Length: 392
Image 1 (cartoon, rainbow, N blue to C red):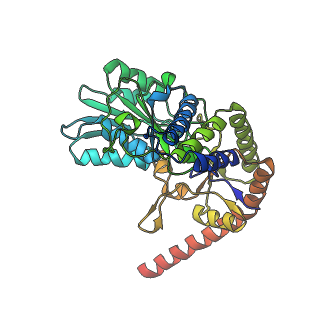
Image 2: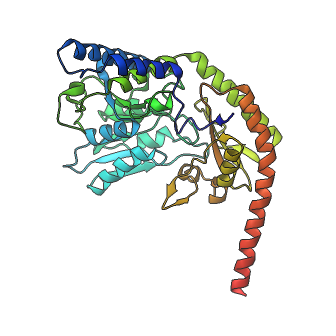
Image 3: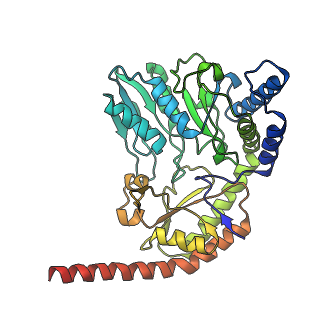
């Protein structure tokens, strides 16, 4: 039986979600914009799903805009809140997800000035530094709530308060945080918040953007009156129904507590069992399912492959660029060397993770990490020897 521990990439769809979507495919097939009975049945299913997603984050249903996922939600907020016709200032962090980094970079190419605030060795951005970067020309602040690689929770609330005092909108990517920590958008203080279904046992292909009531947001997708003219296109009712079902499941705090207990069990056991192992961001507040583990002297990519061959799916948290795996940008920002970043793997638990799976992971790592370190050391010696021969 395989063990899946890469839930920050995507999570397996829950049986309850699958059943809700299957029923929607059978029964709610109408266009929710149509006035006939079939259309109105689809509309009711869509609005019920909207209520469930809104409830997960303490929002009003009318503030929820369904999108194709977290990437579109981030793009819609960033491009929708900054006018490309004028030069503007944007403040963001250097550890954002690429779906937020790239829109900001695009606006930079169009003439916006960007301030990127780094993080400390815990993986946490300094809220004071974010606030100090605000100025009269600042048009937008972009700040994630929880990092997808380390799970470290960022101090959005004090930054949002400062933004509110200055009349500056703040967009928050909460894709990894929603459903894993308690989230209330009013307490958070952001003006837009990005969500995604497939991180919380829902289907791929649907997300949401929470837009604070009264905020004007230029639509990214035009051509229809759907979603109160904030996102054109016929809504996918089955996907929305799946998102709603997943949101209801994710709202149960018992699931979060259970994951936190499993992660504590895993980290305490693996640190005790394997010398020179450490947790990246381990002394910061994190979402309860995420561990970024560093095994000094190991090769993370080889570890991921070895675990996969033994039936365990994890990730490096690294980005693939031009066909090669590079050290994690986030870990480099935290001050790790490229060697240390390249020896780190990410474990992200899910609602279905069991104690037995955690114990099997620890015992497997006990076996393969020493082997991996020996192989890595041999490879380093071989490279150095080849270099010495070339310079001799």
